[in-house]
Amino acid sequence: MDETPDDAATDGAGGDPADRRDLDATALTERLRAERRAVSDEGRPEAVERQHEHGKLTARERVAHLCDDGSFDELGQLAAPAPTTPETVDWEREDAPADGVVAGIGEVEGRPVAIAATDFTVKGGSIGHTGGHKLERLYDLAIDRGFPVVNLHDGGGHRIQEGLDARPTAQGDGGLFRQQTKLSGWVPFVSAMMGPGFAAPTNFSVMADFVPMVEGSTLGVAGPSLVEAALGTEVPKEELGGADVHTVRTGMADAAYPDDEACLDAIAEWLSYLPRNCRRDPPAVEPRAPERDPEDLVDVIPADPKKGYDVRDVIAGVVDAGSVFELKSRYARNIVTAFARVDGEPVGVIANAPRVMAGTIDTDASEKAARFASLCDAFDLPILLFEDTPGVLPGPDSEAEGVARHAGKLPFQLNRATVPIANVVLRRGYGFGHVAMGGGRSARNDLTVVWATAEVAAMGIEGAVDIAYRREIQAADDPEAKREELVAKFQDRTGAIRAASGVGVDAAIAPGETRGRIARMLARADEELEADWPPKKHHIDPI
Image (cartoon, rainbow, N blue to C red; front, side, top):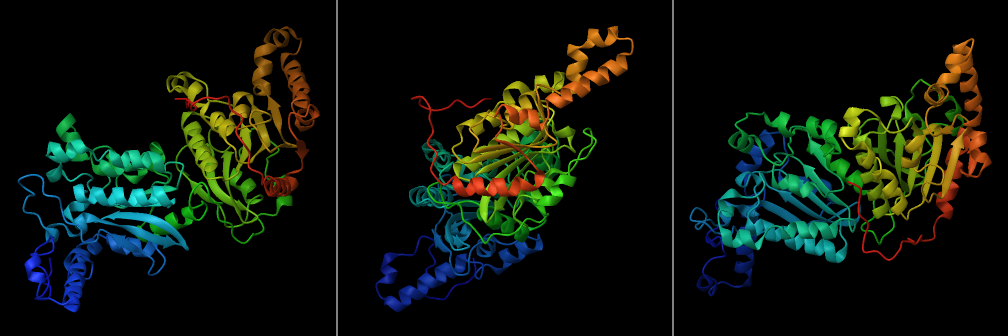
């Protein structure tokens, strides 16, 4: 701890009350300021320099970068460690300034946000009992007043030295997770990995709505040392829980960013699509024309039905220019999930990606899309679905992953949603893939339309013909000609006009009409939709 003025308290708990008897209000105020300065970045230049040498901002610099200027009100700045074990009994405030957690209420783009940042310069960013109490206080405020929560993690989780005591441990830091359960769906919740994130920071992230990572940070239930002790296996931290692991392979993280500033800017942008809490309206901005002329959408779908295309080109002709904020872009790339805006109003977009696995729905895509749909519904963002899928991924590996049950997650979330939903069949709407994407009447859609290029059927036409008409084809004088004749026959019966003939969809439209139809639907769907469920306690989510 840096030196403080002579009249500053030397006792981390605030000094002997007798020492204060001869001090007037001015001197007492100066003493307070000295104590506060001692735990701030200004009073700890060496610690700040060490953090900067690692290319990282300090906890307080991160908070300042995220918040509007001068808006952050810190709570528990003078917190001191809670001595519980022989090793910690003599710890004072100078041993753990602010007990390693910077917490308080700030404003991000004019809206209040509850923010907690662990301080890596204080005992490796570990969370002690006092720091845990600060988090509990912060979460209480967020629950009571409906503030979004942002956790900025940079540390080793629970402080081991304070955890070797049954009395405080039995009282349970698990209360934080009970609070997180209360926060889930009530307010937007961010858990950012900005350094070491094994153990407790990862536990905080499992219920978070947005998990960004800074390159070089980690995420996982246990770090390399514990893995080696438990399993006798040496694994580098990057291979165990680096950004590539969790943005590509597991989907635990939504995105990775090159540095602290980029990560914090992404958090602010993510928050800009969501309301303060589920009782408030999502924030609107000035409308913009789409980046791509809607009339050009007719050229996006290739003439060859087996050829892929970038579904983002379709999205660009429907939503406002510059409004797309994609999530989990490196994970389950056969489906796209993104925030966007239509006429300035936030929406959620779910779209099959034909360039990857032909847009087939597998376990990972189902998980990714279903969780995103749930997030959108919780915070009243309408859901736009752009469909082009040959169905659910078959095969022994897929079945072993439980794809049948996982594929039910997205339609489950769509059917329990009360927000406006639009489904647009761009090309293929086959089998349960059509149901999973909310096609036709498989969800309570406000709008369901098909493009002229749409094909809606129980399965792919060629495969269906090969199975159902195998004997007829084999018996023909020219089997190939017979097969082509049957394929052509059923292509005519699975197209857009046929799909619209039974009012299974609302309309067959030209691609250039899509933005207008969606925008008008959204503008009209302003009456709260009530759920019409039987009197049950709650839903049981598919595994």
